[in-house]
Image (tube, rainbow, N blue to C red; front, side, top):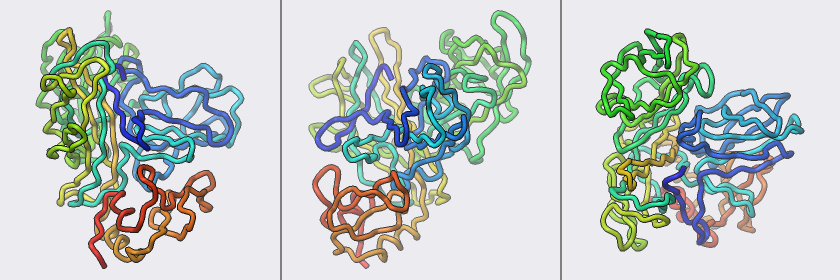
Length: 444
């Protein structure tokens, strides 16, 4: 995260939602950091609220419901941890380092939020790039962001793109076979038809300095671009396994925009699985100039990021450019409740003519439209003025005369949003509350 920083307004203050964390019970967590793009084990973390419980030397990973925003997130497992106050646990959330205290206890609990903001005063999460359940053919409420150039120099040819997101699961370790894995540039990879992903295997391993190997995806060869040599390697043969050579799936291939580095510890029998979500097809983006939102276009089409008073596509060091994001799943989208992810990338050219990219991954769930519309119409009367929304039971509304955040009795440690709008006082009625969650009420 060395080139661009993403911020959004929360209660009149620009906040960075990239990473938040808290100890819920006990003091298990000492430090949580987002890996840099060049760090071993890097890939862009997937937006969500991750809740962990320590169990006799392992951490059970489960998603904390954020108004059901994280339903279907596939990063669920029971994982080994090291708790010595020094070692980085890189296996809990891809792209994130977690250092745990040596005196942690079974039953300790902690939360980590990726691209979602923690209001420590209210002990509540504010959704930023987790957009929750979305209905095909309906448009969510837009969310406004600033892209700030945090590099030391001016960037030109600056663009924002939102594409399908790619992730990798290494079958050997966090670092092997892919030591680094990231999306760059503005091209859109092709989404998977098979939600179980496609297997990466290797062939023709040859020992040397460095070792070399051929790469196969789903048993087929694929063209690879050598970034350092500026040359395409047909069929991806003879790739260096050295932990330093940067490769990219060639433009025009299924995985275009994905860069990777192969580990020096790679062996011919190693495998990995690649997943491409179709989330980019549902994203729309727009420029924001002088607090005015421009015309929305499809996320993969790109918009120009321009700092006020600068030439088109120029953002100076510490300068920023505004943009808006909304979700509009196509009418023919598949309502299978599988979580979608998208890659929101800010791109620019630095003073050395190098293209630099920062990737933030967002999520949403493609929900069943008829069920949600039923709930919106029949749950309560639109004039009911004090609905309270449960984070753990998202279809439940109850009366709360105080209009405050209260603890959810069905899930101690979680909190319920009553009628308070985090940005502007209280929700006056159900119609406004639903609008804040991206749904338009059309009457009984």
